[in-house]
Length: 119
Image 1 (cartoon, rainbow, N blue to C red):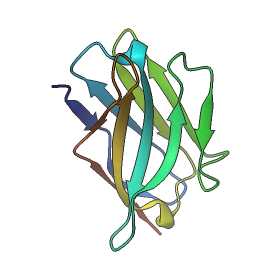
Image 2 (tube, rainbow, N blue to C red; image 1 turned 90 degrees about the vertical axis):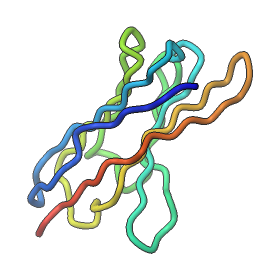
Image 3 (cartoon, rainbow, N blue to C red; image 1 turned 120 degrees about the vertical axis):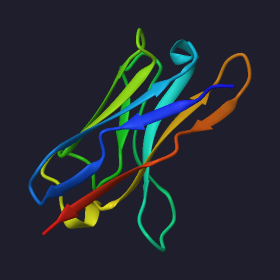
Image 4 (cartoon, rainbow, N blue to C red; image 1 turned 60 degrees about the vertical axis):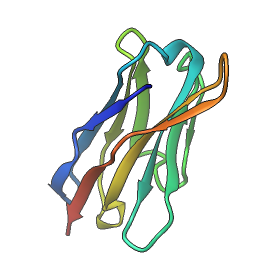
């Protein structure tokens, strides 16, 4: 069973930066798409960014474009989310998702890390 451990959340003032990390317990990077999602209180969980297996293709929510950068280190089975120019509306629990696509499709989620941006 793959486990994901997230870190890097916290409290930051508007305009500040945070870097989230998500490390997978198993060697699944070479067969998995990775991504970050967030969920604010009372709202659904939404996509923030995804990154392809090789890291060559990334996808961002409109709200994240130009401010957030997703990256991965397959040697460390880790995905990162660099968040700059944070806004109060970025406040949410951020979840890491790893979708293994080979040999079978399996979805794994992290436990979530709280990001709070004060105005």
